[in-house]
Length: 92
Image 1 (cartoon, rainbow, N blue to C red):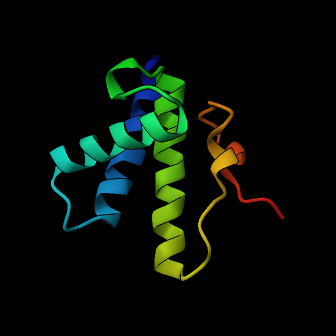
Image 2: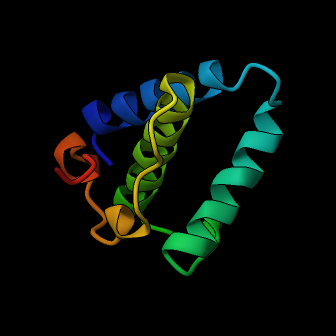
């Protein structure tokens, strides 16, 4: 993972943590591991960096949607492990 992608991952992680003020960092990591198992089929220690970015982006989108009162993303939004924001957009 190059330094730009590392910075982006840490930035998204910080956003997700800020969107979950009652969650401890360890709980957040455990939750991300669970999401990896559910959506990628592997735990946190076994998913690739781009898959982790996909999980982080999806979780951020879900938290933002919850705050805005809009429906959550469908499960297929994580099917393609890409760290681009466009792959995480909800379908029209």
